[in-house]
Image (cartoon, each protein chain N blue to C red):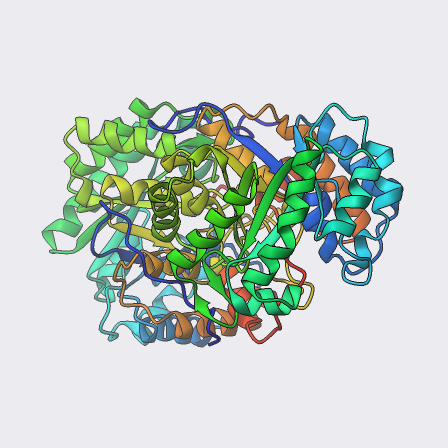
Length: 320
Length: 320
């Protein structure tokens, strides 16, 4: 790397010493890909992510293949990566999904709920409370099997049908997921509309309802370029789990230039500059995302991946 | 716009009530374009930016056409926009540039200096101190003509040849520019490497050297996706002038996918969500950047521009 290729380390007071990155590229990223990615490529992706130092890598989804055909090979994929020395959560929508995951020896699962009625109906064909009721036995059985359970909550800030989502509505569903037995929550800004004050307001309201900050993760999408600023606001509140997707994989397949998840590399750049330990080797991670971008046939939307893939270009002497 | 197309307004305590956006798209953005943009298109770009509510629009540059051929039409352009009811600063490198700007009736000029010896040599073929000495009569004559002077300082955080730039080195040049008579300073992260702790460290050091925060603007490039998070850190310190480029125009012409300046739209989205007044109509600004992207023949790198240009796309029911 050139002299410029790493940020200077200058901590910001009041931030966590360590941040755990929950890497979602292999699941949230690839589930939106149009083409089929071969199972062996997915497995190699997960292996390279682990090699780059990521310690929590969401591997795949046991949603019915009818809904997410891109991850229909979960049964074939999981055994290929199950022995990696990292946490490998898998998404399970219901008891049937849990059965499939447990049969393969999964030790961590993630369930998902919606903060809004519109998305619950569109995604799950249920009301919010019906969806929660459906999750109850899933979480109970996972906990009985000593399996760690993450709860994803979608549409925590805005909803494409309903607009801004009231904070108390989100808090109520978070509380229900915690009461049900979820070990951690991931607060999803599914459509990327959140801004830092809104993030702080939700976190503060969750504290007021006795949801401990250390069970919270944040899951920002970069649709409007807000993901990293929102992450900074969450870190300033004390959140230390951040979801991100290698290379910024993900996003809406119906809008080809729309951007998806917060890119892991952009997050790692900021955390490294802030002196916050993640254990990630940025160079290996960038190389992994560049390799995956080659398989997908298009450039990574991660600005850091693009910049470091072009780092041999000369600086522009005219640039201010 | 759809229900989701604006952020919910939730202020973050401690931020400025108002932010002045210093729009640099027509100068910093277009100076890096390979092709020639017709003068009338540039003029219409400036007019549309003013129509969208931007109040400070850097119009062009009086750098010698040999160095920035893209802006060689400054004499033709400025009279086409000079009557707009907005501040229209122009870049002047030296006394000759100042003469040209004053002859056209410019009321605001911007000079530029480097925080590093390497960039001073590459960009100005001078040492840092030689470059400052050259600027002294420029600033003095501008002030004598009652012309407002902005001082740009490049490479405030990192330098492609030297790596991380020591904070005291930056503070020294800032102090010199203020002592020379500059009315405001723009702290440039020319290569986009800064992270929020580094931003805070520089701002704190400037305060310690009696540089008032209200003369400071920040100028972030989004090369590593850090620009908006860094802006948030600067706002939290009390900075209320932020440079941005409509549509995210700018960037290094030698690396075609490298991103450039902070996109004005991404900034406006965050400020609007934070309840901070800018006077900008986001819809008109997005339309302006989409129009300009059409002239340039490639999509805007602004995530907000892309998202709002695709806002009729259906939401993805499978996305988490």
